[in-house]
Image (tube, rainbow, N blue to C red; front, side, top):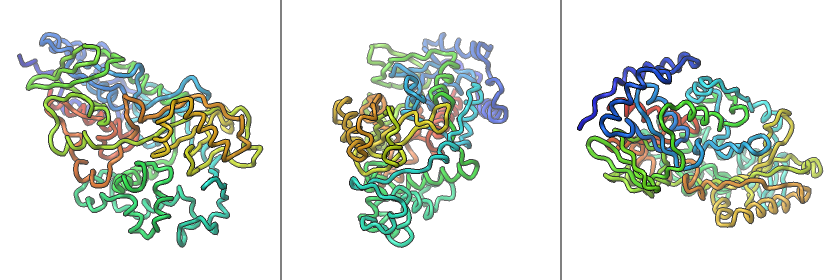
Length: 496
């Protein structure tokens, strides 16, 4: 039997979103307990549905979709495989300074994020002054510390011309920024830019870098992929275009005071419908009238639509019926995700004052980049250090037992900086690749994949809709996650 239509429309959704943007402190279109919410629940119940919409995943994108659907009258049930909400926004509330495992910060121009922050009255911390007060990043190459003023003439410097004055981590971003043809972030998906869907290494060579220079600039501590060879430079151009757009509005970097996990906790707490943790989905099946979701504990849920925020790295291990087709199926099976591992350490003494170096450093060693965190009341206090190996360095650590991996990281830092001997206690580690509910961090489009299926990753498969940062078209990071949840909600509301 076909269920009665809900009293929600595309026009009503747009009016709600516009009202939220214009008046961030205003109540949602349909307040909790309002007649609209009660009216939405009844049709689903009478028709044998557990909800009008099932949302898979309680990260930023899934929560955004769920809230917008509820604010427009839909009855929603959220299923989350973890024992916590937040997804890849993950704050370690039990450590000094409440460091972030994912979702570290957001720009002051992240409009959707700020709307939600203000809606829940969460205080913000502008981290930019602390970062500006402590900009120094030591450089260690092959076990040798090299000062900035000596790098330009150093025999191991592979760069040429003016680039010799730049540190390795400044070269890739500088070249991307100076040679970016995208007029707007969303242009990365335009067929006109398919010629740029090439390896970052090839792009660097076209710009005149030698092989050694390209490897040092793009492969050591890569932000995307495992090296300069397996990431499309078109994705890096998209990221640069988005960052430029943000900086043009404001260069400040913000976080929720006490941890960004407070934002996702507030979003989850605002839901009126069921949010069920430890519900790991194993199958999604759809027909002409409904979607059924099956979990590993034997539970099953039926709704008129399903919004899936699971990354493709997880979704590809589920049964989907009917299966995805064509370019979208290719995306589901092949889209890579970033190998990103973090080891959090608490300093027992200020060893950096003993060796006269800054606490933070960029290395080509297996400890990756080591950053000093200053999240306490005193803006100069180092509340912790985090080592962030990425790419192949992360994969190496991920193969070790957790305690051994943390010992290796601390030992590597002690090898590079003898003053750190006995000064660091590793207190936490998180591998996003080993997290079976993520199987990697952010999505990384390999060469050729943007033009092959970039336009198709977000396409609805009948009553199954997709969101998540991998489906964002014009934004990155936390803002991209919310953008994708908004789009998915609009798709569903247009069909109800």
